[in-house]
Length: 399
Image 1 (cartoon, rainbow, N blue to C red):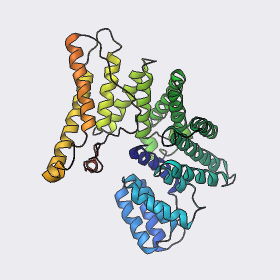
Image 2: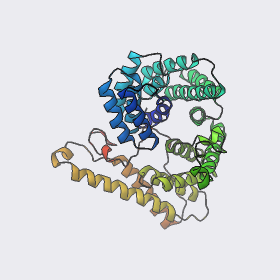
Image 3: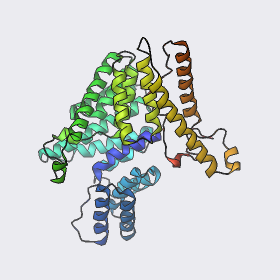
Image 4: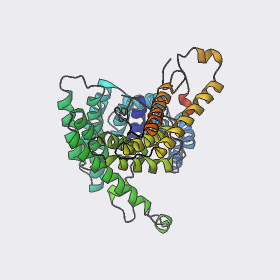
């Protein structure tokens, strides 16, 4: 299982656990409150400073540890986050079930499964509570069971009863929250692994509809509603308020592309979703690459294909990768570069170049392109424009 994906899913799970009590007027609690305010304003670096100061004052406060793990995951420092989660679970193992779920996303194999099971056990014992609390617990359980299913599709896929356990986890997740995108993704992945492609297409179509509905609901909020403080609830349902993350949308787009071999119309839906994501983040190389693949897929379905758009998207991805490789060369000495067998992002560049070559050949011959898509949902192929990944040890290609 790719670390990037673990990190990206830990961000979603950790958000559920960062509501610490600030009623006590101790310095640590006051700093914790200030940190949470900074997080609500999307200022994780500032929040980290507040949390670190709080930890210096009280290094045994598990609320502070949980908050630190949350912000460290957001800042892409999973190892530090894991150390705080482990300490927190040792000091207060029965408090805050969410930290067990977050920790599971940072672990692998049986350790991850044990952490999920512990979190699920605690969530089930939280009591009935009011309807809002019950709904919140149900959604957390759905995410946890979805994580278990993902483990049986990846790390634990060679276990003797992996398919049975995965099926059970998916069923449990959907029983908790039938509209959970995580659960539906897990179910679609399971169906694809079982070669039940038509069923997978139906499921991913359902996911696409849910995401589209939620995105449309947010887009159509008026400025007046937000100024009046209605953006958190307003006239939107609970489901509509749960705006899907970029990571979930990217995974959905990949699955749509994978299903387009059976249902060609899904390629256009994948492209629409990817282009929408590019409007929010045009520095994401993977999005440019996926947009190019989606355009190529659409062209392959046409009698007289026009590869201009596909060439544009893929060329942009190529330029961005080459810029990152150039930055890497500038930031590292000749000795460090020579110690690596290849420069970072070698695989990604080769993939983009192979697609561009196919476009060139197809344009010259007028024939439809044969796209070497493989599995677009392969989580081990992580793309990033983050300069931190231009390091020998953490690059796309290890030395």
